[in-house]
Amino acid sequence: MWRHGFGRVHKWLGLALSVWMVLVALTGTLLLYKTELLQLQYPQLRLTTLPTMAEAAAVFDRFDAGYAFLPRDDKPWTEVIDGDGTTHYFNAAGEHLLARTELGDWVSWMVEFHHHMLLHDLGKDIMGILGLLSLLLVIAGLIRWWPRHWSWRVLSVRFVRPGQRQFMATLWQLHRSSGVIFIIPIAALLITGTAIMYAAFVNQSLERLLPQTSAISSAPMPTTPAYNWQQRLSLAKDYWPQQSPRLIYLAPTAEGNYRMRLRHEGEWHPNGRSYLVFADNGPMVSSDDVRARALGFRLSQTIYPLHVAAVGGWAWLTATLLGGLALILLPVTGVWFWWRRRRR
Image 1: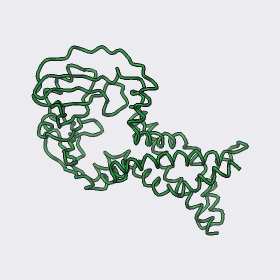
Image 2: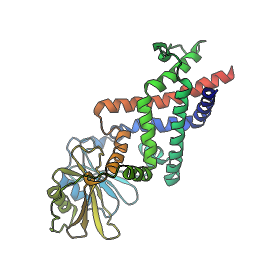
Image 3: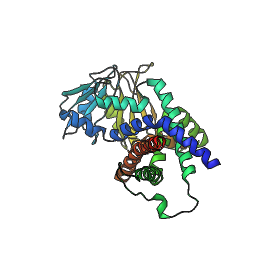
Image 4: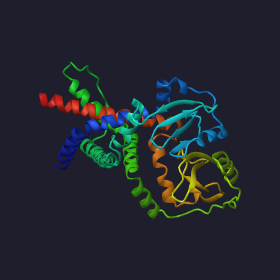
């Protein structure tokens, strides 16, 4: 009786969430190759020379709002997002290559839909709720399917063309087997994606649960004033030689300070979670090394890298790709099976 109840939950949740799940999984899977898609659409981004830190700093000094990313091997350009949300790309010579307005191309549409369904904060709340429901959907499906006796046949698939009589069996077997075989990447994508929607709550909860900190010795704060981004980046390199600047906040804070994010060797987060703060036309005023933060906070910062396959090399990238494809296949085969069965 209880298995039947979980089956009904799985069926109706699957029908309700099918379109959303296909679109989110499709956009997320494609965005694993965002750089390649941008270079395919905009040939001017197919760069071979990586801008230096000094060349990037010269570009940053042209802007007084928004934020910017330092060049990386997987993004061989200087990237600036201005105060209006337009993304600018520059080469090593500081030449302006491209300006992408918000929702100005199909890659931007995919990003905005995958992040918050084109609805900003409201979309983020909706995505969080749908993410929790999708986890319930997967759990209910596993409980409903769980076999009383295990054998290799419980995961076998007999492929039959759509026009043939046994095609419904193929749909059911594909739905069942893809969900079970790829359950680890599927669960990882759903859990991390939902956790990102509730990042503040997850970060605070883990920090309270695991408050242990590590003692990290820091050098004395330099007193040399910095008047531009070249000098701030140079000070940052001298102060933390083991960390690399990754993200620059171009607009000053309410106190008139400038911030940058850095990544230490071995850190999972591609943009790092350590901070340096500089006074306007003044010296460095504070530092925040992520390695000295609570264990729970550091653990929470592994969620995003896992979701976007920024760690784990080709093995986790392949697993994430297969998980995304499975999240497309599951609703398609499930709804198709339900529709053919209902028509009969």
